[in-house]
Image (cartoon, rainbow, N blue to C red):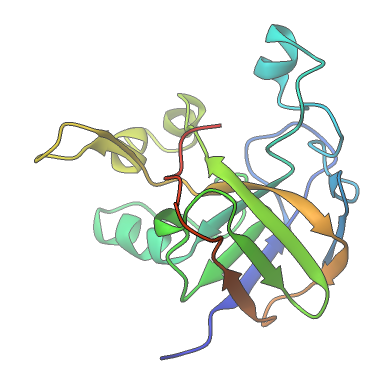
Length: 182
């Protein structure tokens, strides 16, 4: 089995849909990505701030598996790291299969705790027309909504991340709680 890795890191100080790739990003405990528009103890996503600005920021770091980009490419969509607004792009780890509370060790020092699934919105169709139906759908056997646009996490331990850094999952003790949208 190959080692899971960080393939790209991205951040943006403005609230734009896509984030430019960086040589490195710094994760700050309890806050998120240094210099990113979503940094903070309380929610920073504009739609959520409008609902309740005092709610905790469970979306400090957005992670997407690069295998999603491969899948989208097969469907005719060119999507690159940072395009969907993620901070950390990974390869070799099934982020969507992790239970809530999984701790991801990123690089030498950083640790984030997975809080839930990203809930993609219509902005994805503004980025690439028709893309939303490829990242949100229904399981044909159960009828359940399937969200593929990555996971959200909070920063437990700080650290600097770079492409090529290792990713290791620390699964919480059972019973496991499946990921839900946050």
